[in-house]
Amino acid sequence: MFLLAGSALSAFVVEARVQDGPVAPRRTVSVIDTATHEAAARAIRVGPYPSSIAISPDGGRAYVVTSGNGSVAVINLRANRLVGSPIKIGPYPEGIAITPDGGRVYAVNYGNNSVSAIDTETNEVVAKIRVGRGPTAIAITPDGTRAYVTNSRDGTVSVIDTATNETAARAIKVGRVPLALAVAPDGTRVYVANIRDDTVSVIRIATNKLAPRRIKTGDSPTAIAITTDGRRLYVANARDDTVSVIDTATNGLAAKAIEVGHRPTAIAVSPISRRAYVTGLTGSLSVVNTKVNQPVTKPIEVGPFPVAIAVSPDGRRVYIVHN
Image (cartoon, rainbow, N blue to C red; front, side):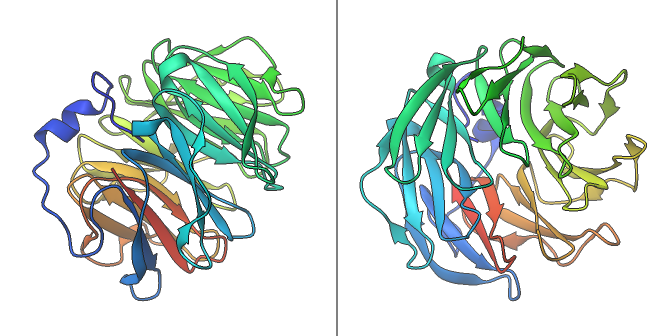
C-alpha cells in the first residue's frame, strides 16, 4: 500500500530509518525464491511510488500500482520485464486485485474515490466505479462476481457487481480506518482490518451484513491474509511487530501472536506450502511456518520500504513491492 501523506500509516514511514538493502532498491519489485529465500532474478524497476501488486491466475503477469504517476505497470513474469506502457487510471491509486479468470484487473484510486476496471486483453480501462471516501484496498470473491473495497476515510466497505461494474449494495459500515481485507476461499465471508480499532470486522457475503462481534487483534492491524483452506486468518499488526492468528470457525485467537520484523506492512500466504510471508517497513521479510505458527528463520533483509507482497500461484516465487 502506498503511504500517502496524512494516511494512517504515514507516521511509520517518517520514523523508519531505512538503508538500501542487498536485494532491491526502492521503486522496484524484487523476486525471491521461496526455497532458498534469496533473489531469484534482478529486481524489476517500475514507476514512482509503487504501492500494491496482483498476479494473474496463470502466474504469467503481475500488475503493479504506481501511485506517483496514477498508473498500473504490467510485468511479464516469465521474462521479468515490463510490458508496454503504464496504464493510466486515476490519482493516487493504492490497492489492486484480479478476477479469478484473469480477465479484469480492478485498481483503487484513493485520490478521487473510484475504482478503475482494466481489460487484461487490451490493457485499457473499461469502467470507473464510484466508491466511498479514501478507498485503499480491494478483494474479489472466488466466483468473480463481487469486489469489496475498503474506504478508509468513512469507515465503510463498498460492494461492486463485476458484471455491471456498478456498486451492488449500500456501503457496509465497519470499524475505524479500514485498510485491508481478505475474502474467504469458500466465498462466504470478507474479513476487514480496522487499523484504528485494532479489530477485524466480518462481513457475511450472502447478506452483506456484519457478524455481531469484531475480532480483537494486535496494535494497528494493517494487512490481512487467509489460508487456502480458509481455516486461519493472519493479521499483521504494525505497531507491535506481530501477526495475529485467528481461527475462522470461532473468530477467536488460534495461537500466540507471532513476532516478526519491525513495522509489518504486508502479508501473503502461499497457495501451496504452509508458509506466510510478512514484510517489515525497515526492509525485512519474515517467513512463518503456518503449521506451528513460528518463524522459519530470522527476518531476511530484502531492501527498503517493502509495502506489498504476493506469492506466485505455484508457490515458488515471492514478489515484493519496494516503495
